[in-house]
Image 1 (cartoon, rainbow over the protein chains, first blue to last red):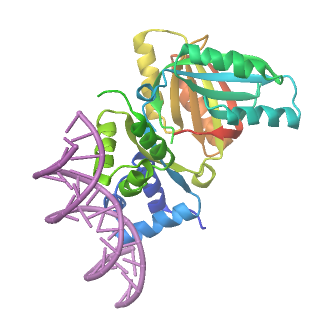
Image 2 (cartoon, each protein chain N blue to C red):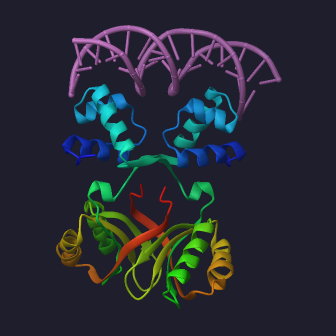
Image 3 (cartoon, chains in turn blue, yellow, cyan, green):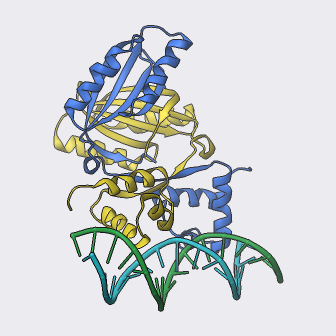
Length: 150
Length: 150
DNA sequence: GGTGAAACGTAGGCCGT
DNA sequence: ACGGCCTACGTTTCACC
C-alpha cells in the first residue's frame, strides 16, 4: 500500500509500453530476479495501480473509419440532467470516452464509428434527441501523431 | 490479409478486455484449439490489426492528479511547422495524445501532469515557448463517466 | 531479495480435412 | 488454407533460504 519506489516506476513504464512482456524479460530490464519482479507486479495489480491489460487495436483494421472529438453543452446543470446524459453516453457503443470538463461546455466525448454516415446517425439520432443537450461541436480526427492511450 | 471473420472478432474482443489472457484460455473462450488460436493471434499481430499490448495504470496511483484536454491553433499551416509541433508533442512526456483535427484549430491534446503547478509549467514553458503556437485553450477533466481507452 | 524445481503455457512441426 | 494433435522448450510460480 506504500508509495511507489524507483523500481516500481520502472516496472510500470515497461508494462505500459509492452503489457505482454514476459516476467523474465521484465525482471532483467528492471534489474531484479524473476520472482522478486513477479511479486512486485502482483502487488501492483492487487493494489489497483495496474488496472488491467489490453490489446491495442488498429481502428482502421477493425472497421472504425471515423473518429471525432465532440464537445457537448447541456441546457440544465442539475445532477439529474447530468446523470441522464451520462447514462446515455454509457449506453452508446460509439462513445468510447466521456469526460466532464471545466469551461463553457460540460463534456468532451471521443466517438468512433464505421464511417461518416454512421457518425451522422449517432449525431442526429442519439445526441440530437437527448433533451438535455443544447450544443454539439464535432472535431473530426484526421490523424494522431501521438497516441499513448493505455 | 483478408477480412476479419467472426472468430477473429471474438479474439479481438477478448484481448482488448484482457490483453494478458493465456493463449490456452483464449482458445477455449473462442472455441478453438490452442495452436489454431495462436496462429490467428500471431497473424493479427503481424498484419497490424493488433498494434500491441499495454498495462492500464491508475492515474491517481501513479502521481497523475491533473488531466486536461487542450486545443491548439498554429499560426502557420506549413508542413514543416506541423512537423516541428508534432515533434515537440512527441518529446513531451505530459502529452499522452495528440490528434490532428478539423475545424478552426489544428490539434487536440490529452495532457497528464502531477498537479496544477506541473501543468502550468507545461503550459507556459513548453507549449507557450513553441513559435508555431498561437492559440491554447485548456479544458480540465473533472471526471470521466466513461473511459474505454483501449 | 534470490534460488531452484515442479507446474504450466507456448510455439512449431506434422498430419488430416 | 485452416484446424487439431503432439512435444520440446521456455516461462511462471511457489516453497524455501
